[in-house]
Image 1 (cartoon, rainbow, N blue to C red):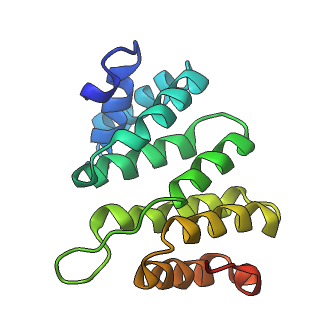
Image 2: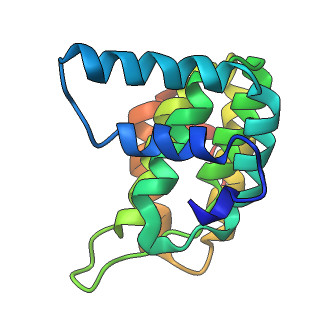
Length: 166
């Protein structure tokens, strides 16, 4: 994966992304999967910062890679506060729609970010900051805001009364 070429662990990240395509119960798959997880444990902070740095330059049509990199951050052995910040930042993205008016594949990753974020958010104030920032970023698009709010309602119903639509 060219995104991470300059890092010594580039192959480990690529393997993790590729392994996500495979769902195999063979012992060979299990061996590869476990070896990859062990390799990822060797540099969790370096991998985290590399992924964080690259997330904003991943093209929209590489939505699968974005999703797998979020899954990678979720399994890294780093403090929950780092994960909370990372997934919160992934919520604050411009919502895009496809030609048929549905959420684009890349924007669907915002929902995935919310699901991951929910695991690490301890109090409503953790959520509210990122939720309101996402609404502000999408202030010129009522449909985008509606889509965000409908997802906040699913993942964080307790914040609905405190959301600020600009």
